[in-house]
Amino acid sequence: MDIEIREIRNDVEEINKVKDFLFGQIDNEYHIGPTPKFHYDIFELNEYYIAPTQNNFFVAFDEDKIVATIGIRAYDKDFEFFRGVYSSDDTASIWRLMVDRDYRRKGIARLLVDKVEDFASNNGYDRIYLHTHRYLESGLPFWKSRGFVITVEEDDYDETTHMVKVLNSK
Image 1 (cartoon, rainbow, N blue to C red):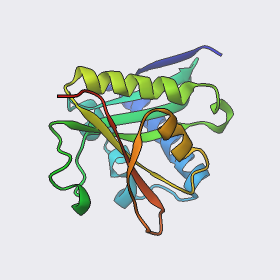
Image 2 (cartoon, rainbow, N blue to C red):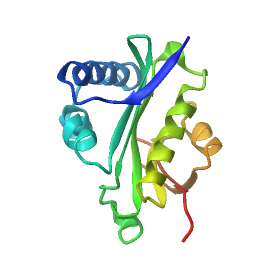
Image 3 (tube, rainbow, N blue to C red):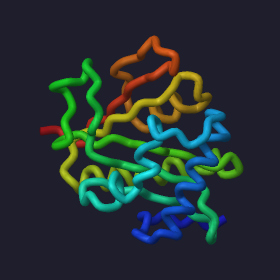
Image 4 (cartoon, rainbow, N blue to C red):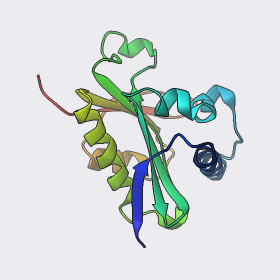
């Protein structure tokens, strides 16, 4: 297994393959199909990840097969409990870390997170925000092992846990 990680190219064929991979992973994990309310960024990969220079999307390939993805973009959520805490100027956010089941526990997610952390540091971000869900078996242990700390645990239907990792101190 020789994994290559690279930035997504602004190529319609590659973008469509990435979308197919992401929607397949979402169906496998969450048992839902493409839903604009939740997957707007996947429908518009160019707008959210490719065109903005402060954002990026990385894809892991095993030869020509997509086996994992991760996106990073300027923080753009409007959670009431984070107003005045995070901004798009100093906070990046991780999106769409998805690893094919056959490629899990092989270090690919770690490599992808290293890529986005380097990207965030090199683009002036001080910290990285993400949210995960407590029902995902390895989500919290993985993110904690990468140095992310829990900031808020919601008691919502999705068991949402918000996390952050400080990259640079001022």
